[in-house]
Amino acid sequence: MLLVNQILGRADAPRFSHRQHVAVSISAHDAGRRRMRLHAEDGTELGIDLPRQNWLFHGAVLYDDGARIVVVARPAEPVMVIALLDLTPEAAFRIGHALGNRHSPSELRGNEIVVPVTDTPELASRPVLALGLPDLAIRFEHRRFAADGPPICTGATHEHPQHHVGHAHRHHG
Image (tube, rainbow, N blue to C red; front, side, top):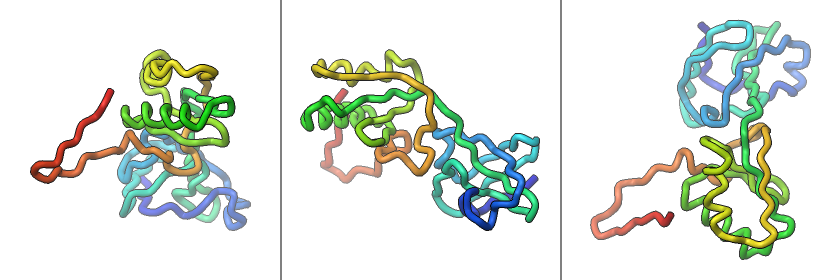
C-alpha cells in the first residue's frame, strides 16, 4: 500500500509532464476527508493520511515514483444548476438563504449556483422552487462538483460549536 501524507502538486505542472498518470477517483463528498483507503485505477492500494484538512482537487498529485504519478480524478456527479442571469439580486439572495438554511454545499460558477444532488432532483430543488420566484431556471446535469477547490458554501461539513448558556440557535426550514 502507498501511504499518502501530502499533495505533491498539480498533474499539469512541468515537473510531472513525462510521467504516466494513474487515476484515483475521489467524489466531491470525500474530497475534504483527511483519511481514507482506496484503490487507483490500476489496482494500487492507497492509504491517505493528510496531516491537516486539505481539498483533494481534480488533478492533485498524490504519489510520484519518478515514472508514474497517482492523480485525483474527480468524476462527474449529479448536480442542480440554478441560472442567475435573469434573476434579481433579491431573488439570488433568497435562493442562497434557502440553500444555506438546509446546509447545502454549493458553489458559484459564473452566473450559476451549482449544488450536488445527494438524493433526488425533486428533493434537491424543493427549497428553491418553494420560493415561487418568477423567471427561475433550474436544470440537472452531471459535472465535477467543487473540482478546483472546496465549495463556497460547505454545508456538508457544517458543525455546530458548543453553544454558550443563554445562546439560542435555530434553523428555519
